[in-house]
Image (cartoon, rainbow, N blue to C red):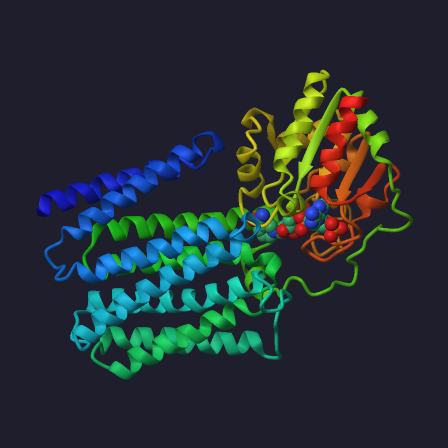
Length: 456
Ligand code: NAP
């Protein structure tokens, strides 16, 4: 039986690695997810064969209740609420890791060797702070807590003291494992630290924080693996931990922010020079004129953003794309790495609408093509096309790489009104002479454009 378990863990680990590899490209991502799902199934089956399992009743009950909640959530939670749903999953995953650690400690009354107590303490520390941190992140993203950074005087000092005491207790436990009060105090402080860590971070940065919390949850799982001598947990937790960490760095780079600035910078507070060169009038355009411009263009580039996700306009944009192509127009999609509210948000939506991957262009590929573009259609994007990031060093988003739509011949912006982007700052693009504003819900405007392009 031991060989069967070890073999299932080995295959599961290989499938996880293969799955991650496939996730590096949208074309193979689906296959990667299926491989990882199969890997997880094998890991669960292998674990259920373990001789240490004494009762299957609780496991079956947990499986049914948890599975039902998961299935219902996946049906009910809208695509736009995925970030907060993911945050909740992290919270529960981390709580599970924490509880395993607490149970191990409690069962052995702290009589553990140096290696085991280190693994268990690390698991409980990371698991506990990830639980409360993820719950606060979910509440902020859902609007149950203010999205703006919640700060107070001396907060960084308070947090620093908290972490020094918590890490101090962790160190103390390694040499005095049977000191119960130190273990439970460390756990309680880690719960508090999770709250304090996320409260001062604005919801614009929440996806980065979640990638980081995901990484902590992974490392907590890896520590659990060491604590209960489970190889697949060590491998899966390490993969999760480091891929989460790499993801948070990639996202920070795409926003030109450092990880310390995200964690301690209180981004989201209004800045002095947030408006840049946003002066003058926004020019409203008529839908039929836009349709004619697009129908007779050589090249049209669609630039989707968060507004396309909220409007669920991905299918209708595909229809418009087809109509234009039938007329011989070259159509491309420009994808910014942090457009929307989670990594790959636009790719997921456009894939759902069967937009071919060959039509999706990344920032580095498309920027030099904007001067050759007759019409750039911005669909509910704002921050990712804000020229202030490039032109105004005083802007809070200065240095963030943008899609340079302002360099195309004409820009049409589809948005409902004068609402700001997630960073809360004004966008000078909307005031440029070559920009026209087409107000209205993106899905409705696009549906009318499909009709008008056919008539043009
Ligand atoms: P954005 O800057 O948040 O702007 C979205 C725009 O969509 C708003 O200005 C809004 O204007 C418009 N809109 C909303 N609902 C709409 C609807 N139904 N129809 C038409 N327009 C609608 O979006 P973005 O350009 O995609 O930028 C993403 C932001 O999130 C960046 O600041 C980025 O740094 C941040 N972020 C993203 C990630 C990630 O992983 N993707 C991670 C961290 C941070 P109206 O209200 O006027 O309609």
